[in-house]
Image (cartoon, rainbow, N blue to C red; front, top):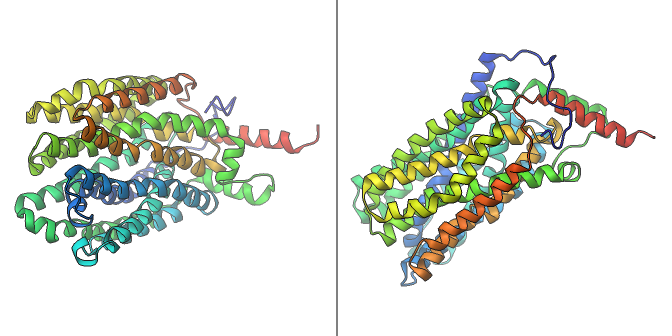
Length: 460
């Protein structure tokens, strides 16, 4: 950003953008992201509805079993920073396209194998152990997926519409979640509870193989951006031009920390809305899970359009005002949304979920543009991946676990609402430290970084 890369806000000599290539790039990015998040959200939903009953040992307490399932869910978040380091390094060195082909295959294989797992009654503790291993592989792949998907688009996009175009891979997330929700909804509606727990849930995991093949094929048809190819060539010529996670942490530690702060409230809010709400409504409010999944599907569909609209807004009024509004509104969500969920009225419930995802979109849609404008090309994949994925360990992975534990211990949602409010305040304060980067040229960022490197290695 301008705070880390001074003087990098204009580059009149940037080449024109190939709109046809940009559209193909968006399609390739979205295709993979849809399947990645279909698989990931499928696991989150199955943790609440299935794994606690068929993979985990019986404890005599529904909340204990769900917490155990969500602990394995959290393993994926622990793996994601490692994936960000590994695949960020590969992506900065070899390219975004190659890395994205690798990540989509890894997560697809892991998800299909999850659908083949024996139950706890069949193999005992080996069942949850195998689930943990596969979940780790899934999280590892997803840790490298997000950075490559958004950069493939952001680096092809024109400077004045970067947030608009980079919002598309973000919008693929609710599409993947919607597909997973619809498949699970169909299974729960058409099958008995016994059939769903026996084999129905497995079909949803196996279906990911079809989308993986399609996504992999589409990703083969695109190329890395010209600005990445230029940076790659310069790395080969200049010994001082390093890349990867160690370089970005050494050179731009403040950018990494601020990226993590931006992510904090957004990540917590998302998993409270889409994961904890399922547990809360099914276990505490005794709502039918089939009907609930239908309401969540509606919310995911709305989320798609919110993300795209916010991307345009961020290119119009700027990144920082939009993000700040999202953080402030997010801090209030728990205090008025949970009373709406307590009504057990479908209209009130879906309104609370839709409102939560609309607020989330104000932060999530803007992230790719902001983070892409924080780092030079030679270390951008690593920089945004670390900022994004490390935060998920102490944000998204812990959020549903803490919320379920508080619900079990206190029987209320009050602590969860306070927790989200504190997160919103922290992210809001981080936003206030940032300068507006609307219209920033990525080539100008690279030139500023090159000038800084030259000053550091040249004798005074």
